[in-house]
Amino acid sequence: MSSGMPRRTKIVATIGPASDSPTTLRAMIAAGMDTARISLAHDAMEPTIERMGRVRQAAEAEGRIVGVLADLPGPKVRAAAFPEGGVTIAQDSLVELVAADDGDGSTERRIAVEHPPLLSELLPGDAVALGDGGLRLRVRDVGADRATATVETGGWAQGRPGVALPPGRTSLSSPTDTDLRYLDALCEAGVDAVAISFVRTAEDMVRVRKAAGPDGPMLVAKIETQEAVDNVDEIIGVADGVMVARGDLGIRCAIEDVPHHQKRIIRTGVAYGRPVITATQMLESMLRAPTPTRAEVSDIANAVFDGTSALMLSGESAVGLHPVAAVATMAQVAMRAEREFDYGTWGRSLGRQQSVEVVGAPAGVRITAAVSAAGWRAAMDAEAAAIIACTNSGATARAISRFRPTAPVLACTPSERTARQLSMAWGVTPMIVDAQGTTDDIVWFAVKSASDRGVVRPGDVVAVLVGSPTDVEPVTDVLRMVRVR
Image (cartoon, rainbow, N blue to C red):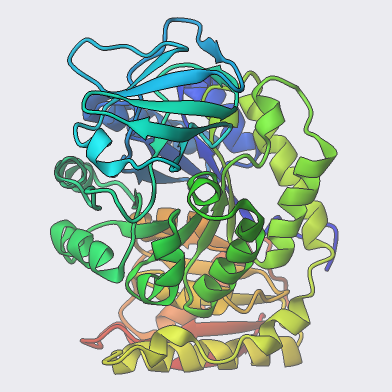
């Protein structure tokens, strides 16, 4: 792979107080942000919609296509707020756990948990974690109005950190009523994608799909519980994308299992033709430091080698001191790792697209999968300068992306929303083009667009994947090898 090849692995960056200004947003886009993540765990709906508008204005100013991924809070339990500036919770100390009442706050000795049935869901010996698992407690006894716990791993606590209770015993489920209210507002605002937190089964995603409607956004399943890992094939089969949420996953599963879960989730997601986002603590040190640790650089590179579609920044870009530098660092490390990726072995070992094996998969899905596989092989054999996927929904581009081809993948679409949604798809450069009335015109104008962008030159061979614009069922059923004139 040429060192001059554009970066293929996409970057998702969380927008927060540190990155909210138009100037910083533009700088992050220029540095390599492909998708902006906006979390609803801490913000109300109105600021979220305003933030989405600022992202789109910044993308337009930079001349880039940038997607927006809204992250629903889900049934996450949180501690009541710690005092301003935070507190130190000492290792081996004893703390009380209580169900929070109105106006309650948390201290280093008494943690108020915003979950009324807290005490009924705890047993002596249970592990409880705060935040991303840096603070760990072990329950000693449970009384009528409080539980006592020993601090096994101490540390700093501030804000309203998440509280991880014993898995399998909680009464909470996803999506929550709040999630569904947020989803309605996000759909109305035209968000590109929505991440669903604490998914446990495929039925959770089906409920969200029904609420979003047929014209709703992409739905990304966050895999962050052992139940989700156990059901990952079924969940990915009904999702549009998947996120390896390593923070909560590392709390709810054995931490030594997380790298293996990551590899399996990525491989499964790609096998289904779904974009996969690898998230949490990728550049954690850059919350404060201007440069990453060596371990973080290795972590990013290994996620690229695993085949992830996108890498995600969380606190690093939302509240860190160096949001633009974090994006630029991630882009630089990803590009270097891509030079060592084994593209040929990856594509040859993929096998059949698993989404076509789902019972009742439409014929159009099966045909598109077969034609995209043929397109990958033909492009490789003909040493094509580019693969052009002509697509309305983005499915064709994602189907060819799963093979991780060495040739650039251009997605020509008349839909601005589809173009933004493809900002999470590995190796895909979206281009917005005018709708055409015939297959011949679609092919001609797609090749012309690629030529105008300087991606292909006279004499180059291009593989073009396209379907008929008059078909009732969307299907990519034509592969053309075109010599550019």
